[in-house]
Length: 65
Image 1 (cartoon, helix red, strand yellow):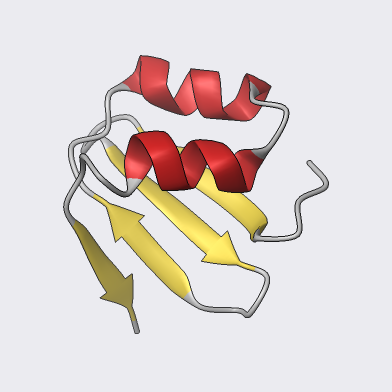
Image 2 (tube, helix red, strand yellow):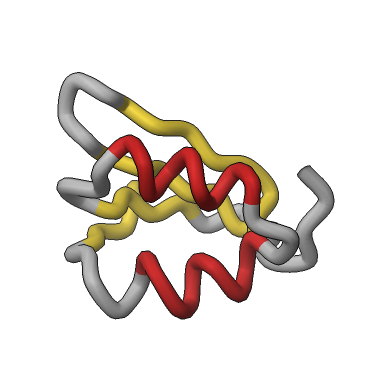
């Protein structure tokens, strides 16, 4: 998954949390993300564009420390 923004992503289906690790090393959990949104992000040609247009504006998030 080459991306200039997203280094890694992991989906927790039991809690519907999408964890994004940015290339900076920072990690954020996006809350109540449906599985199909995660699946679509995996298929997206640009993970960063998808994250900015679909995930960030619609799902609450918290920084993982």
